[in-house]
Length: 126
Image 1 (cartoon, rainbow, N blue to C red):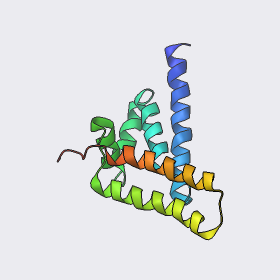
Image 2 (cartoon, rainbow, N blue to C red):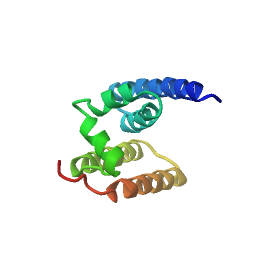
Image 3 (cartoon, rainbow, N blue to C red):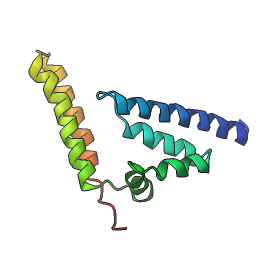
Image 4 (tube, rainbow, N blue to C red):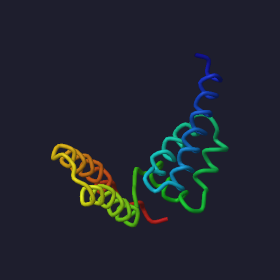
């Protein structure tokens, strides 16, 4: 595929991920940050203007920049992520009966994801 065509496809995919991130801000069950991370990855390869625009957003730009530059996650973001993830699996388990394998799978997946997130370094001071 021609380089310009690849950039155009990545640009469109970046916008799709950005749209999903915006939807995620409105729906509590849908994540936002993973879609933003995918969007900045696509825009970094297709549109430096959009890439910088997302990294300069006042609400999430600092966190995204720390991830992109250092693979780092702030302590505040780690705590919020842990609270939200644990709450999102605990509430359904408490409110309705689920098969044991579903509960174990949910706990295992949550533990793996949280293990990854909690072991990321903290951003360097800016």
